[in-house]
Length: 104
Image (cartoon, rainbow, N blue to C red; front, side, top):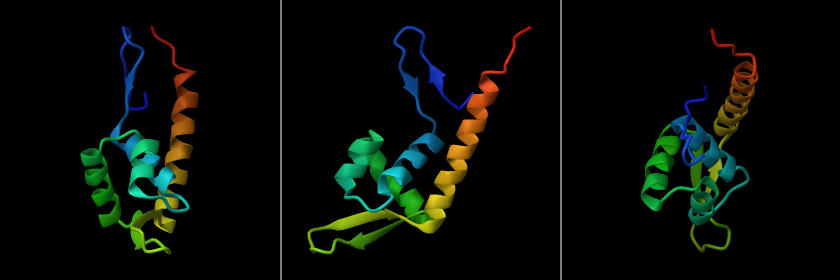
């Protein structure tokens, strides 16, 4: 229902692009280094690069220099936090519908 296909043999699920975007925005709330975001969102470096570029180009994440000049910090913008709030609300709604489904 949520854009997730579950393998009955392994129990693993594939995340949708929206889930990945939401996990990155969530990881950057309050600011985080790229490595922290990568591990928190469970992505490879190349995957993270593509998603961060997408989020930054749409104004959902911004890049700033760290206060101690030791690198860059990725931070969710106000627009990014609105996206995350809307995503979580939709996810909750879709999960509540999944419990109501009946098959004929």
